Amino acid sequence: MRITYINTLTKMARENPKIVCVIGDTGFSVFEDFEKEFRDRFVNVGIAEQNFVGFGAGLAAMGLKPYIYNVASFMTLRAMEQIVLDVCFQENPVVMVGVGGGLAYGNAGPTHHAPFDIAMLRVLPNMNIICPADPVEMRAAMLASEHFDKPLYIRIGRSVDPIVHNKEIDFRIGKALKMRDGGDAVLFATGTMVKDAVKACELLEHKGISMALYSMHTIKPLDEELILNCVGKYKAMFTLEEHSMIGGLGSAVSEVLARHMGSFSVKLRPFGFPDDFAPVTGSREYLNELYGISPVGVAAGIEETLSQR
Image (cartoon, rainbow, N blue to C red; front, side, top):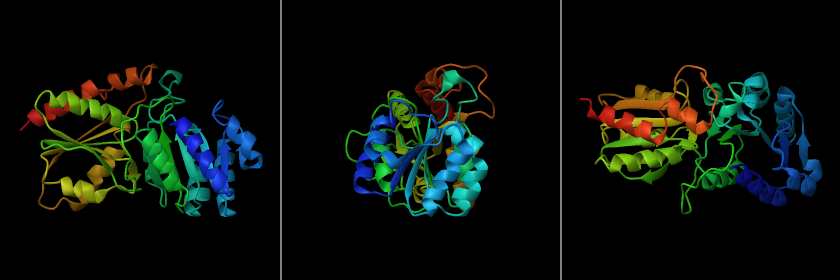
């Protein structure tokens, strides 16, 4: 998605002179061509995350359209006060692009892990959050962001992400995308976990379990209408995310059910990281398997839940 991000941004910048790209001393081998073409619309603020976010907010306040790009953990953890006061409180339409969501930087250890960023940003007034599933959703999210006039956080993976959409999509901020129909239960997945959700559903299909699947690319504002439409239609709901089970997609869905549940009842099981720091380092795939959110782990968890009465 990194390549899709810079390629789409480059095309947008050729048409829109207000677009400015800001980095925090990251993304080497990705931004050189953009810098050569646009020169004064590219700024490397350096390793100074608070200044990086404040600089982006200032550009937005001046009427420009800043896209600020940094490692997800650095941008959100180190610059939280600037995100709150400079971006959200003043409603500056900064587009924050965080690379390496979840445990994408698994081998680098907890300093680079980003399992809390969605929870931290989701509680902030005026903040909006998109987690694209693949390059197709990433391109659509970028195009939608250009004239979006509110603070926006786009959380992406780290390296090459498989394509899960093999056709054009109707991407709208706040509206989930249907990936497959199913009658037994529904799975809401977000970000790069959608590809794992597809595999989990295929595994379950071989066991006679029919799963509906949606890409919940927008965590905030959440597609509450879809969630409520699924209540009563399915006997169980599941969420899958590369994030702590506290404060992420699973929490957001449970909050919707708590506010609107009425006389309905439905099982809800989240799949994500426990309330813990990763005990070891390793690849993203290794750590996700360790936490039971690999396709095999998710399929087994769904089968177990559905077997319970």
